[in-house]
Image (cartoon, rainbow, N blue to C red; front, side, top):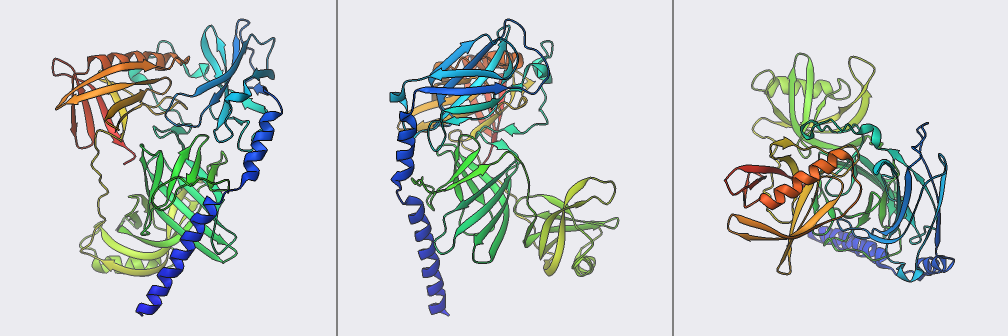
Length: 493
């Protein structure tokens, strides 16, 4: 038995080493392509359109900016821009000239655009549009989204609501989203990934070893390490998959130690713009309840609760529940092979996720799901802004989630904060429970009126804050009179 176990360990170590080696292989072909691509010219040609059938005001201004967006959570570096008054409606054609000496083939460049009416944004791009490097060219087509129709100048800041659109978290990902891609494999053609991420830190993952007839499904929770811009998946396996969060809703595979893998091989999972959660089949553990002829199952790793379909091995798990549950509606810990699937609701025509029991395994009346809880520290934690001067703060439309991040490294303490539009940065010093912010600066983008107002509140809060207090993953800012003036919640732990 020991000999067999040792051989299995050696095999999996060889598989992993081969996988990392394949990601670390150096291919100069892609880099040479980028260099020749840059040599063709120093002009970006683009077209911008919007779908709304309305005319823009005569005094409107169109702007397009070429930027270096390689580093997340840092101000984009402007490489070139163009600004003019459009002669009519879409399509709006534009050209951006730039200095090719400022382009590094190893970095990421994107074009963003907007239309200003009376100095305020009316239409704007809401995602990256890569150009120049990493296979992108000198042309770009941009779909502008209307932003002005969501603004109400009379709307007070305490009535801000969250849009039904995808939200952009403090980590920079637009969620919910499905990420797809084939990653390198040591002894097969590729490992095909389908990764679904939800904003509540739940993930579903399917991995298929192409050419080997092997598929593994997994569920769990994800967290983010802000210092490395790393997404970490905590599932039922012993190892934790890690990905670097890249611009454009992309995830790049990290090695087993969480270090970057430098390679031109396909080591990324991409969001293709369509959220399509996959049905999974796997062994599930959690707590089952049964009341009023309806069974529910709460999965332990994610904490999600699902209705249990009355099919498959349901009769056996139902009999076991009736025999072992202390009373009707009580929780009973169960283990079974099953599926999480889409299915019609019992009433109505809508679709919901359900659990199907394929093979009942075990029930334990003395066991419960462990509560998932991590204590936050002030530094290296995304702190979601929940209120400023008693006014609730929520994400606005497709803008980034309001948050503040404290970073302490190399004896330097810095912070970055945003309510969704501009970024406020600076340094801070802490002496016990006292805190002081210094050397603050801000980007100067045009923002929706509501976010303009919130930014003024945030700047005022930073100036007035004298003390901080952290308890139960809730952070408070306190002024010189001992009054709470801002509240934050630790997220993505």
